Image 1 (cartoon, rainbow, N blue to C red):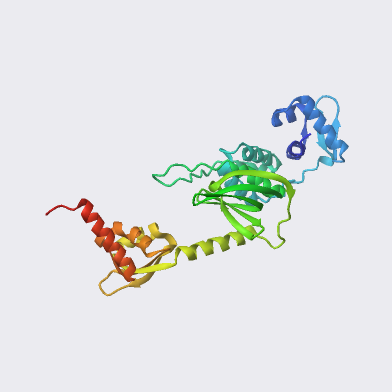
Image 2: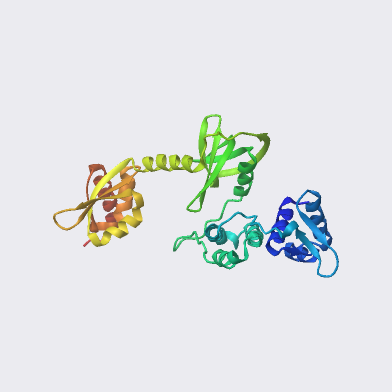
Length: 315
């Protein structure tokens, strides 16, 4: 007997006041006999439900109890359905959960909640990009995180494969790339899930550190990564009209210093190495003027010379 089906039955009863076994069976897509057993199990478990015999009978909560078992206010219900509804079309479990939760809401909440569930679609692919497939191992890791089960990972990085034993503390989806934050014998580590060749859940359990908070841990990871990505900086000048394009392209790695005397805007571009800055800015041609450091200018000159040799004419 599934606990989630019993909860769904109870939510259905509080939403309608009185139900028959046939109505429960139709709503939960089970047989009438199964629905009747579930109703009897609720009564036997001490839940205040009782049957009424005869025509117009059914099962009711004692005293006609109408407490909102979901505990949600109207704004909370709307916010929840806006958030979860976007993924429901691709996830049967989410769709089923929302359908059950609707039954738990007061009648006055339901129309807005159902509308919110259909109000948003999330398309993670940028224009011109293909959809990124969610790694199949994500489901296994999610279960391991929830059940606090240790995992054995076969991990590949820079062409080297290693086997790691880890305590999965949490998963993060960043721009359709998944990361696993886990505890290892060497402390907290972050793994890119698409580099996990194989994962197996072991029979061992673990305790997540009491002071661990996934959002705070991820903020630390992002901060450390951005610092590495900003190890080198270059100063450049660009026309004001082109600044929004450059900022969109570079994101947080483009900082605006302000306007200069000739009307252009001075910016600071950061990247892990001088060569990477040059590669990112070379496509702008003469529309951007790099003032320094010399290493970036040298890489730009080298790239320009290579392009002239490849594509230049004798003229």
